[in-house]
Image (cartoon, each protein chain N blue to C red):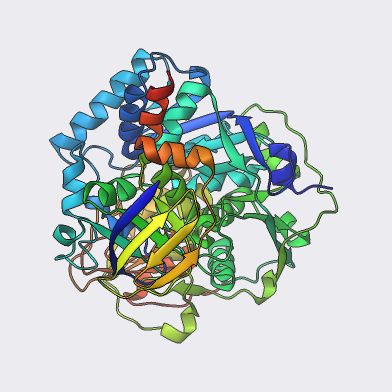
Amino acid sequence: MRIEGTALCMGPDIDTDIIIAGRYLRTRDRTEWARHAFEDLDPSLAPRLEGRVIIAGKNFGCGSSREQAAIALKESGVKGVVAPSFARIFFRNAINIGLPVVECDCTCRAGEPVTADLGEGIITIGERSYRIRPLSPRMVEILSAGGLVEYWRGRR
Amino acid sequence: MSTLSEKILGAQAGSYVDCRVDRAYVHDGTGVLTLDAWKSMQADTLARPDRVYVLFDHIVPANNSVTAGLQHDLRLFAREKGLSFTDVGEGICHQLMGEGIALPGEIVVGADSHTCTLGAFGAFATGVGATDMAAIWVEGGTWFRVPETIAVNLAGSFSGRAEAKDLALTYVGRLSMDGATYRALEFVGEGVTTLSMDSRLTLSNLAVETGAKAGLFYSDDVTCNYLKEYGHKVHPQHPDECSYLRELYIDLEDVVPVVAIPPRVDTIKPVADLEGMPLDQVFLGTCTNGRFEDLDRFARIIRGKKVKIRTLVAPASRNVLVRATESGILQDLLMAGCTVLPPGCGPCLGAHQGVLGEGEVCLSTANRNFRNRMGVGGEIYLASVATAAASALSGSLACPKEVTG
């Protein structure tokens, strides 16, 4: 499982209200969540998320359990999220819906190319490479399938 | 020797376990996504439908026809599958699960982060997302990593001005917003015996604001007597000598009224430092502080007086509202000028019923003060019930006086 994209830097404690506000949750239209991703942080950000790897500070995805937060990022074309730590519900949600998440404390410079191999446990940002804790084989399989639902279908 | 989480999950911290789930619940917000994921899994049945609960609380009654349509789908599904279902006006999912459903020693999973509230009963209760919940519907169980535990060791008892919410904000401030990520909190020490069930629910409720997976109390006489009211005969759980990752000591006598400054739940200051700060709205309610004890405490302070700013009160459940009605508290609230909302989450998540405008400031008894949560450009200060009542009367942030009979 490889991810590739360009770096988008963010601070610590990015909560799920900031990723997708409560006022946009009541719909089945996933593109609606993507359109409003990070709106309260920077309204101009959503259309620029395609192909990005978010490199954030600690405790990414804290707060509400809303799975729409992880879906909003995936739908808007975010390739993955890298942070020293994640809130545990967001972390599980991300794997379950097929959004790669990487635990790593690394330096971010906006726009640098990012590549990561989650099974091998390595991430490269610009010229810098970091070892990361590899995800379990099952987690990699779920991500490769595109999420838990797709993984499940493939096994039935 | 084991922590309570280790006992309930049946393995040592750090292990991965597959567990049956004793109670699995969703609300109108997360339930729709769960239903969609469950359908995508091409399942026809639920493994343990008698253990699945659907409780409407987030946007009740529906605020527009899109929400109404989504709720309609979920309502039909719950009825078709014979699930336990509570419709609009019954109350907040965590409160209803705490009114005689969740029991000590059980594994309780909710598709909402504040499911940790039910740890107050000595249950292992934790939140998951919608897809995890759909898999629980299909399989009847899920996997957990057994968490290490941080003990919050309590001594003494509260003085007249501080209450459980001040203690909750105090421990969140000391642990910080990610100080317990992947961990469980366990509330222990002699101070616990002085805490009512309603107070314990408030303390467990805030556990997730430190990143914790669960926040547990050992069941004791208080728990047993509370559940007896609902017809359950349960037994106290006895703590072992066990090793905690860390212990936090708090003497309840040292706890003072505090507020959490936006946009972080862990930025805590004494109310006294900010006294007089102008407010536009006071909100009493939510899964943190919408219980009978909270409404009663609020009413004791405002009874016979008038609130100076708009003050919204959302009882946590129909039960709470009925008790408030029978005891005369509802009348106290109405006569003092409060606006009473239907049982549910109210404006906490910024969807309806008291959303803030640009530049407005709300003093709320809820659990989150994230940027724009209750409305774009609005700010949320979190505080106790008594601080909310004193502030409603003065129209600005005010220190509670001693609360008496």
